[in-house]
Length: 131
Image (cartoon, rainbow, N blue to C red; front, side, top):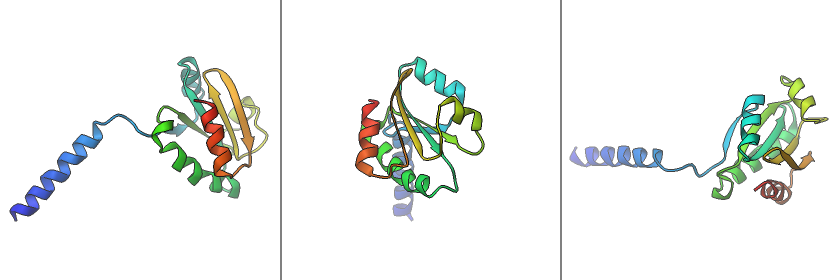
């Protein structure tokens, strides 16, 4: 019984300690113009992912993006996901023609964009270009 309590206490302590560590992965959130503008104003590195749930290319990009943005190198990257079907005005404002579009910015400057790319090396290079 004592061993169980010690393990429980150790688990709680680890959870508390990990919760207090600095972020080691990119921050993902739904696209809003306010968040986008604030990140641009702050000069942050930004990835805009124009995604559609029905899109097989988008579904292929997602695990690649999740794996890459979990790396400490991309911890300061702001990832904003635009729903292609529900946010048509934002898609137009970003001058995107279709889903599976990835756009990177450094502050207010668009650095690069790609459409339909599922090559992990190409996507990694795209993300690095915004750092």
